[in-house]
Length: 487
Image (tube, rainbow, N blue to C red; front, side, top):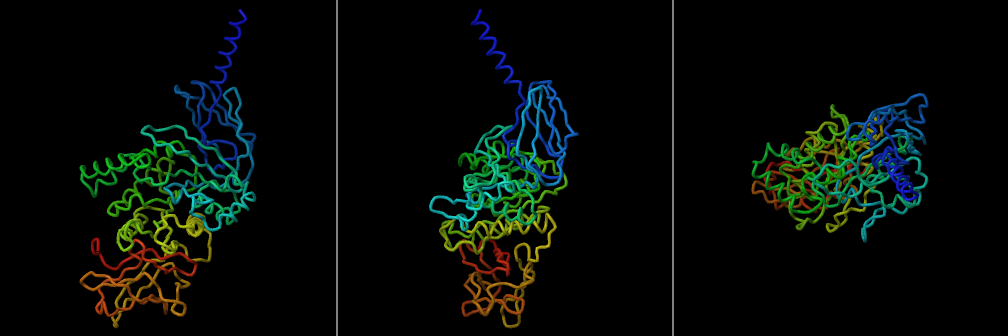
């Protein structure tokens, strides 16, 4: 009899544990919810149960929903303007409380190893300013919160992931994405409100891995045959866990889809270096899919991304990266509310694929967000300087004027010549050319190798050593005046 009673007690206890409402990992203590939004909140309980959600910022309001036959439930929770900490109580008869909830701005940060690279750096690869950022991290404990999605490569869509929200601290900040963390620093300092960074990345990943296979196929259908698309996807699927079509979308993006956010940051491209004919189409398609997943039907969520850095990529003199970055830049032109950050001057040598100057990249992303998304007048030229006009003057030299350079460009003539420019004649053979900034324009001079220039290029090789920036340090990305194919 006693044995039966013990067994019954264990069974009842097990049932009670099963009945308790359950939340995905992305809803945890220390989280940040997007301010002034109808925040999506979801979870699981027993089928047919009524789940009630109460938030401490509005004691008179509560939301009640019923679970479906599969036990899933979803609700919307109106959030106030920034502030906190608050708590959220979720109950299906048994209460679950999420504590230390801040309200502020949330950004989803994704990509490959240059997004993944933590504040503390990789082994033998450092991050400039990491020590200072880590030492003062505690002062941001209520202003920066991080959630890093655990790695999961899978062929099946996942409802949940591994991870937990963390406060910025001496112990948590070193392992956070440097790009995301420095971005959050700049934004929270400028807006004086909490910033949450939802980080989902995997080093070496392909862009195909971050969206459904059907989206990749549709994106490529205008430029490739079905057989070519099949081969590209088959090659990715053979390449490993972080490459296969949709594998990271299924396991690392889908589980957090719809967690209300202001926008996206993206740093990826090296793995797709050979796709300079179609990367722009894939990125634009991925952005459409992500915005749809977040319920953005108006293409309103900003998407800011980083151009891949100069690196040997096997052959420093090759033009492969030049063509790819050109294609990356084109992605912004076919994607509403999108723009990019440049990396041209951030690598000192061609054998480091993870530049140490992550803060410089984050500053560019923050300038875009603060100006374009939040409408703040920074007093700085925002965005990459780009050629507005390229023309040959009467002396046979090129004269180039630039956008996003109202205050001028560096280096100016009195300091040093500009490096990274090349010119070619009709033979399409390029030679280095002297260039300098003067009178509001960059002049690129002809020389004995090219007495009659037909084309000019800047920083259009894998590791060309270009040094041209605007006065606020934003690099000029690779560009060219010609339309020659693969020269």
